[in-house]
Image (cartoon, rainbow, N blue to C red; front, side):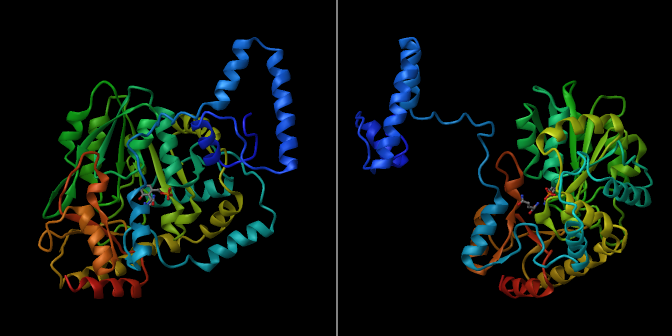
Length: 446
Ligand code: PMP
Ligand code: GLN
């Protein structure tokens, strides 16, 4: 109790380092408090063995040992770093993936109405039934599989929590989990928190963009493989699965105990003649898949952090066991608001043309530069090869682009476990047309 409540941590550290029991300057009230505490400690110590008493006083003197990190390799995410640099330099932020425009006012009204109607207490653990029903109806109408809203759909605090919960509920220490690089930044920490071992397979990049080498995924499977984590439409590459990708993934897991986490947060952003190959469309795959999506992407509300998981009842039951102790429930008025708003399918059906326009505007503007454009078949990301402009490593190029040209981007190298340079960076085109034009004006110098 040396020093009591008076004095800052720095003062206490100084006192400790001098080996003294000095008090920092404190007033009479503080001194009375400290005296009370000392007397209390004395009485307590007298009733204990001298060993126990000295252990207490030693503990009170010892500085807290640094925590042994469960994620020792993790720093601040690249998205946060680049957004901060963009803000500091006044750059156009095409780095972190979020819209710079607001959502539909009707959605705000729906949430506001829900709050005013008194939907402000805990909802059911798995989410309010009208929202689970709306998700079930949407999935059935788009992909042809009917998930039971009572037992097979769970509302989550965004896709990030959904993904962590999927991993925690099915990966045990020592299990292997196959991830495909470039990989979204939350997957590997989730595996590590569960005590699992990530096994990396790299996408290949050619003139037609990125693709998954399924033969390498098959070769990475061992008796310890528990889960394969896939993502289509894919962040950061903008590539999408076609029917052949799904067929190959299905063949790999057939007859095994391997589960699949299918991250489909960009499900409504698939362009041109393509369609979204949701795992829900493919019965054999859907039987072992946790399908994850996010309202944040679909409705331009990334800050609301609300999403869902659709999975067969047996998988959903285990998911909910973990879910109820890591968030328990997700905020109520947003759920009611979204349930009402989802009655109209137009906002998600119109999302692809809405973003295709932005993608085309952005690609058109870049076509006069020395950036080489990779295909963007889905998501709101556009990858470019900048090797004709610079031989800087990707992270350095992004810093330079932000600082000197005034446009922020994300290095693809940030999505790999081991350092890997491909001379490719990612731009986000979920921005007002005017924002994209300002960025293009700056990039046109390159
Ligand atoms: N998966 C992917 C591929 C993402 O890009 C993101 C966010 N951008 C997430 C998951 C997380 O989504 P949420 O914000 O709903 O947690
Ligand atoms: N998913 C977003 C992106 O890829 C960022 C989300 C985050 O900052 N964690 O840019």
